[in-house]
Image (cartoon, rainbow, N blue to C red; front, top):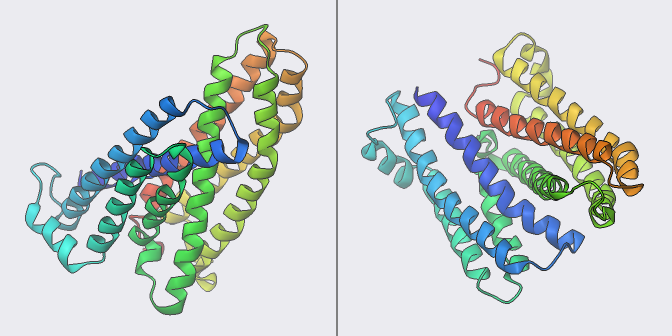
Length: 291
């Protein structure tokens, strides 16, 4: 019960912080639209949600430590985690970043300024998994790779959210050129994201398991989950290529019901795969790779 609550809290927190960083990153890179008021509301909700979910994750971590239900909260164990482990400074840094994100939203064109504190908040996730337990120089390298992985994943998730929303609003006969241009324009950003995910993911795997111990993953629960994650990543790559080379050109030719339907289905499956990957990451972070 406590393990499920911890995995669920990690999943929700990762999704929230990924969107908080990924949405303004996509809007900034793509120069998409000027609906500042609506975007401020979404990002403010995500920032507040990040604080609430961080508190839930702390309570879930305390429950998992003592193998007790998350309710009623184990305040004594939570206090120990905050004052005697690195979790306290990590949550303090994240809380400060989320407050800075809320403050940035009050500035003119604040949706752009929120990107930096949002990136800091997302980066703190690297200190709450396996990378946070790695010591010395190896730990620095591991956390740097994990931060790069988190930022790249956030960029992809934010892009998927915007693109899926845009395609869902399309109707047959609409002028599809703005949406098609946004889809096509994501190609360069998407290529950089994929390259970063592959390189940083390889470094993370080597740091967590060790190259010599990689064969030990075969048949283990960690190995099966990691294999499922990689399979879903491959599926996302295939769908991204399909969108780029087949479905987007079809949409550029005209917003026909078939073109819209195919693109919606592809983005729905790709977004679902991304959510499933985040869920698997939330689970993997609670496991011993070699157990």
